[in-house]
Structure formats: structure tokens, C-alpha cells
Image (cartoon, rainbow, N blue to C red; front, side, top):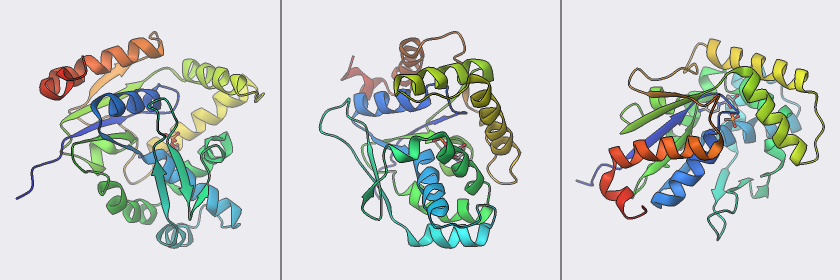
Amino acid sequence: MSARVPVIAVDGPGGTGKGTVCAAISSRLGWHLLDSGALYRALGLVATQRGLPLDDGASVAHLASGIRVSFSRGERAADPVRTTVNGADVTEEIRSEECGSAASRVAAHPAVRAGLLVEQRAFRRKPGLVADGRDMGTVVFPDADLKIYLTATAEVRAERRHKQLKQKGIDVSLRRLFEDMSERDRRDQARSVSPMQPAQDAMVIDTSRQDAAKVLETVWDLVCRCFPRQADQHN
Ligand code: DC
């Protein structure tokens, strides 16, 4: 029988530093990385491009079964993970606020989520997996070895996103960002399947008063406690 592959599940809303933490932890440990939000974003992008009504669950689920989303890591640890859909690079495109909102809408359909379940679980390969999302610890990997739920106030998260967008030269009003994020949170929390919520056995960390480096340090401490042998090689 093959050995069980360990999983670290990191869930929570956008703007909590989840993506940065997951990328850093997976690269330190040399483990695989699943950015499940990128799967939903890629699907939201293609559905929008093809003019599908995002509220039509059956059509979007059909589309999901026919497209191939893949990820590839750059040569250096700091390089972003590239996302392609049917061979086309959509890495930058899927990061827009519009795509985030489309992702949240397509992700609300039970048939879409069911279709992506097998695909997400296939990322669980040796030596281990760091999974980033909304339902990693509750639904996709309920037996994860370590479950972390990152949170922060909506105001702080909107400010962080605003700063990130400004650095990229994108000018969006903070108020608009706050409203869009709050609407997305409401939809992600209220959907009938896999709503965004901490698993009962998750460590909940409020990052409102912590900068990115401090959040990473806090999470790395938990990883070291849970996986002393694997983490030891990197300390
Ligand atoms: O983490 P993100 O901002 O890239 O996610 C975009 C949207 O995708 C999010 O608003 C809801 C959806 N999503 C989800 O429903 N389940 C996940 N595991 C990950 C993302």
C-alpha cells in the first residue's frame, strides 16, 4: 500500500495573505501547491469570454468538464506559478477583480464544485501538498494534517488589495473594492455547498494586525510543530 500523502489546508477570504503564505510554505517544504481559487478564476474567465450566463450551473459545469487548467512553477522559488487554460497563459488575466467576482459566481454551483473535486484531489502527491482555498479543510481534504484559517477585517483586506493594485498601476476606488469584497464574502459564505467557513479543527489566525512576514512566521511555527522532521531540513 502506498504511504499517505500529508496535506496542509489553508482557507479563508481574499486579502488575508493566504496566497503568499501557501507559496512560501510549499516552496520551503518542496511540496506541491494547489491554488484552488485559480481553478475557479480560470473557469470564470472562460465562461465570461464565451458569453455563458454565470448563473447557469449546468452550462458552467459542462464547460468545466471540457477545459484543461494547468499550473507550472517557475525555475526560481520567487517566480509566480503560471496558469494556462487549454494551453493559453492566463496568469495575469485571472487576477483581475472581475475574474475574482466571476470565480465566486461560478463556484456557487454544486455541479461545478462536484466536477472540480477529483481534479483538486489529484494534486495530493508525494512528498506533500499545500492547498489554498475556501473549502480545503472542510470538503476537499477533510483529513488534512494541519488546517489553518486566515482571516482579517474586511476593511484591512480591502486596503491590502487596494495597495497591491496600486503597485500594479491599477487605480480602483477603495470604497468600491470594499463593497465588491464584502459581496464576494457574502456569496462565498452563503452558498449551499462548501460554504467558506473554518473547519472545526482549524487553527484560526486573525491577520488584521500582522504584516505578511509575521503571518508567514506564525504559520511556519505551526508547520514546524506539525511536521518537525520535514521542517527541520529547512530551518
Ligand atoms: O482565492 P481567490 O480569490 O483566488 O478565489 C476566487 C473565488 O473562487 C472566491 O471568491 C470563491 C472561489 N473559490 C471557492 O469557492 N472555493 C475555493 N476553494 C477557492 C476559491
